[in-house]
Image (cartoon, one colour):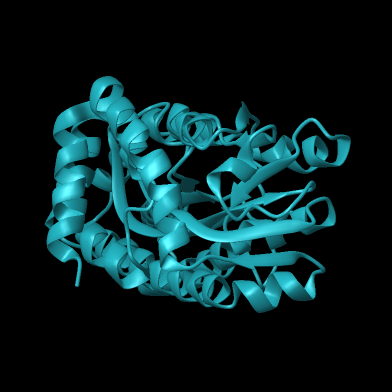
Length: 338
């Protein structure tokens, strides 16, 4: 009887060990943070849902994906620090939030650089984009998995139409907390004020800022049209969202789990790009329906904005960010231009 009891106890102990190991394996949590509302018309959130579905299925539940939309885990700067420390596994962060940890990312603020979406994708998905991502990983411990759209940025304001650089004079323009955007607005004659994304709607409502610059997706996401009567479709910057993963977390994954995360990011990137691009291309219609007065610019008018702003911004980037990386970006854009 004692021998039988001992055998049963051994079996039970083995089962408990196996169960505990399986539970530990099942409890590998991937916290996925982004900054758009949890709505089905928001590219970041739809992309996040697709990522979660793919990764959990492809890993048979060994990775559990927890989505935290609308900045629930903190500011962009806090997310960048979390990724570096490993307390956040994945975050989709806009280009204004990345330079606090990886200053070189400021180069994407060079205005009027890309002709269209396809031109930007050719540069970002090509050798230049991969080289920059690897440099970021080595210097920060953050793995840049993919580049997606944050919308082509346009100027909006509550005062009057902007058709030429002179129309920017006297306008208090909100910019994201990034020196390169401050330089851009200054070069065009406006008065820039850096305000965090979460505080922007209130700043516009209270008149702290007369205007701002963002893509269609963000204008809709935060209902900025409620306080902005005029929009000029100048397309000064192709703005980015980067899919960022803690390198420490990524290196802890099994080959199967890494493959699932890689594939999940690609699925998310495509959805994110497609939805944002569609909104960009329908900007006149979408924003007009929201009651905004839409100003479209000819190629010659856009060139006036380019000549007024690009030299000053490039000079700043080469002196205060990186001459090497600025030149590499311009060269990549020139060689990919069709």
